[in-house]
Amino acid sequence: MEKKMNRFRRAWLAACMSLALTDVACGRRSEAPRPALDLSYLPSDVMLVAYADTVRLKESPLYRAWESRAPGEKNRLAEAKTFLQRLGVDTEKDLDGVLVACAPSADSAEWMALLRGRFDVERIGKGLEDPSARMAKESYRQWSIYNLVLVPDLGDLSVALVDSSALALGKSDTLRRMLDAREKPEISLQSKGLMKRLVPRLDGRAQIWAMLDARALIKGFKDSKEKIPGAVEIPDLGNLSSVVSASLSASLGEDLSLRLEIGSDSSRHAQSLADGLKGVLGFARLGGAAKEKDLGAVLDGIRVDGSGESVVLRAEVPGEVALRLEKKWEEPSR
Image 1 (cartoon, rainbow, N blue to C red):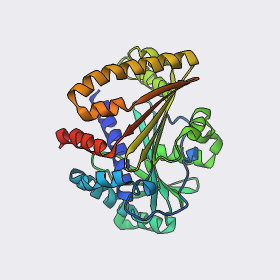
Image 2: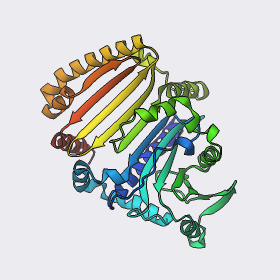
Image 3: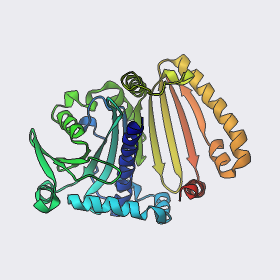
Image 4: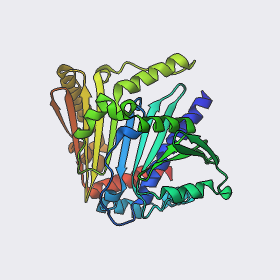
């Protein structure tokens, strides 16, 4: 169990590092065109996809305010920037966006990251192949996979130069699966009906998106339970057991706007889920408003609407409220 937790911790840190790369990239002038959310780089069994448009994020006054008052994050951002510089990536000019994805594996989650932008593949490749880089190179089809030295807290990490607009990070086995998907789009996530249908539902004005295949997630947990002795039993999820998918769009301007759409397996279950969420929010408002004024204001601003087989939650959070809450949540961890 401890071994499994260590793997999970490394996977979580890998995701956090990818978000750090997002922060690092948000310091340059906006350039066009920017890459679309392209699922053809991902294996078809991916159950979670999150993407941050770093070019547009830096245009948000709220984001810039967050960035300017996060002294505790300076070391993490510096480490991420140094890591990318070692790869030959200029974070100020090359990076447009960061995609993080997760697929189930035999013993834990399989994380992967894709950096989108405009990369000088030849220059980066020469740097990676320089003897001083101390990286092992393996050929895979028409690509090269570079096995990096062990990264603190992350473990094994490799990189593949997919093309001039995409650089993949993950374990070498994971990168081979990503390259297989890129070479044959018919076996990629782009061909998977559920995820493909979720993309048009994302808010085009948002800078951050996330999509979840809920059934694949539950199946992954069940498979892990069967394969791993002592794995935790999945509790009865009630109305949540009917959830098929979820998609989140986050828009940062002066304020923060969130839109979460939950797909259910039937209109009846969607209505039941909407009613349940309204009840939960009602109880949360009673407690949250009494204990924390800002949290109460956020809860009061959440709207729940049901339409067909979908439930949509919308939240509008004033920038000053978001900043105060962020500061309070960060204080205990510093």
